[in-house]
Length: 74
Image (cartoon, rainbow, N blue to C red; front, side):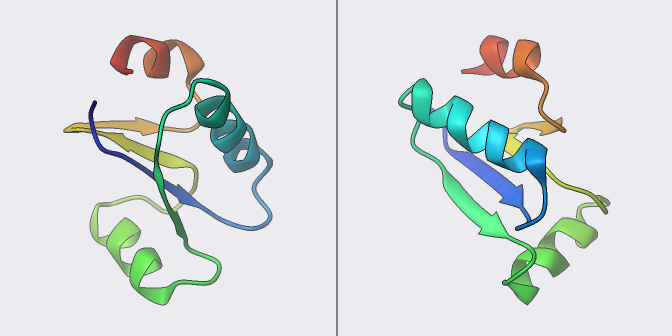
């Protein structure tokens, strides 16, 4: 199985939906909360993203909760 990392924030509704989607699919993931983790925020900005959720699936990046794309990658 590929490594899955999810960049989230506390106030992001789509972030909660992504996490629930991954739980429902029994996909283990690492959460990096940019609201609480300054290093995670810097990582995200360095990659060129200003908003969340950003989901990394292996070498692929999904911006936003794109269920169709996630279904293809997982």
